[in-house]
Length: 300
Image 1 (tube, rainbow, N blue to C red):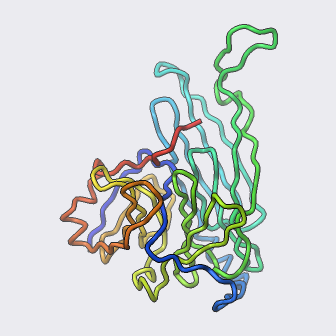
Image 2 (image 1 turned 90 degrees about the horizontal axis):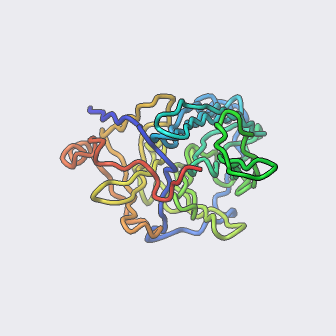
Image 3 (image 1 turned 45 degrees about the vertical axis):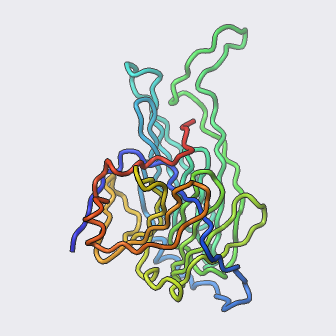
């Protein structure tokens, strides 16, 4: 068994481009799932404690933490005006009404929060963040001056429900397309992978793959977007859940799954199951082979 460790120096909006060869239209009438019992929700929420570095640069850094059982998301923003300036830090704590199971960020401009009510009904929300300006013009006019982030007001938050229902079972992992076109949803119950359109209002999830069409999904616990320097954008379907460490462990044994989108057009290629030998031969464990920023990430 071999594990490859990647240091997450800067991970922004890990999302993807979608549109697999065969999208199976999701129907709530087909093999309808009932809401999970509260004990299942609590068990999954207890393990949904994670830390994620959204981005890290010379002048700005952003770290996201969430605690599933406590129903809270904490964003830590660090910023300085120039390279010679001292860091200024702002912390924003947000609460959800439901147990949180996974959270993804689009460059601290949008949060996608997946969770469940105590009854077991799944809910997915989009939280839009509106940031106060960094440079402020005095009331009497004149030149705008820089306001350290610690002294600015917190971003306002608008929350929209994207999906609510029990048809998918509980959601283990989500990932957002860097361009905000869709979400990928991994069911904890059926292990199916769904796509939720974010462009067309009122869209319902569509099943991309099930364990019948892609049996390896049975071992997958998280979905991650990354861009390989020569092979392009892809979603990585991993056997490791999200964790609280700054170090990302990608186990190549026994396998992972790649869903490629080399043209960044939202059309995903046929799933590619990567075993340990293929992983090592391709050098996927070398950090410099990966660009971990989402392509559309411009920190606010």
